[in-house]
Image (cartoon, rainbow, N blue to C red; front, side):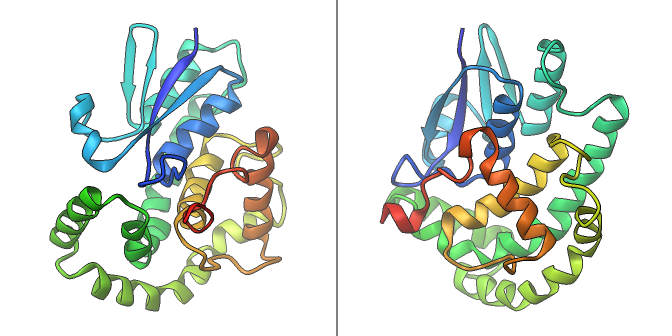
Length: 230
């Protein structure tokens, strides 16, 4: 039986931009599981009875939150490649997730606000503007302008990741693990909604991200972008 994964999508349902949903999509591919991807707009989440996405349905089980989904998949399908490589790996992935949210998401989540908004349907644009402007305390344009000024600092913030990837192909070591999907999800978010170059070509992080995009028959690289869908 195929697993159903509900993903956040733009006006064009092919444009799937959520970094958290990408963690789950890569996790399902990592496990070698059959899955069906269902696009859901911002204003459709509550209609499905969910609060946030991603959500998966596996038979009679419904699981929300990308980290909880990964833990569920590792427990339920323990005979397939592990997403964490053991209990210690799960604990380390928690750290990577917090680090990614505090460093990468905190900058991209501001800088990309107009790009995200522009790929949404009108009713979703109204919802997105209202909720994000309440969250950040300013217009999405003003918040983005301030966020763009922080982008140069992202390069320095990625130094620990860059140094690590100079000595091993993946954050997980010799093969990708959920910790890789956590960080790659953030850069896929930017890649899908914006034409802006976030990572310099040839940078070890950019080389690693290109490697991530090519995983599972180019699952990430084949993703529709807002620019291509326009």
